[in-house]
Amino acid sequence: MGNVLSLQLARERAWQSAANPETTELDGGSASNERLLERLEAENVQLRRRVVELALQIQALRDDARARTA
Image (cartoon, rainbow, N blue to C red; front, side, top):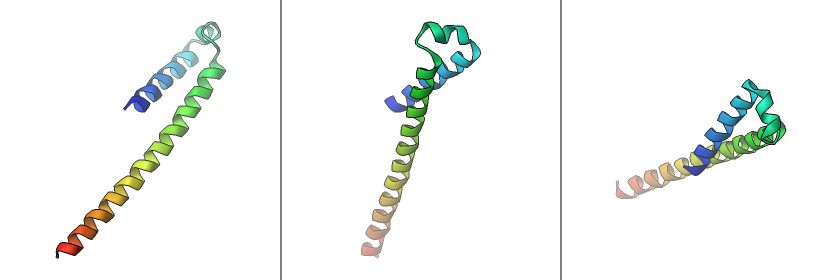
């Protein structure tokens, strides 16, 4: 859940930076915000892939358990 909130915060900051470029220069620059956003988006992709893998494993275990009881 923390990763999702971090990604949302990074996106909000990136959008704010794009809307108001003067603030990005004062708070550390838009380049660092962009790198953070890219890193969080890459992490989000990895997490989503892992969720799919786990869902497939769960389904396989359920199917196996059904086959054993049938």
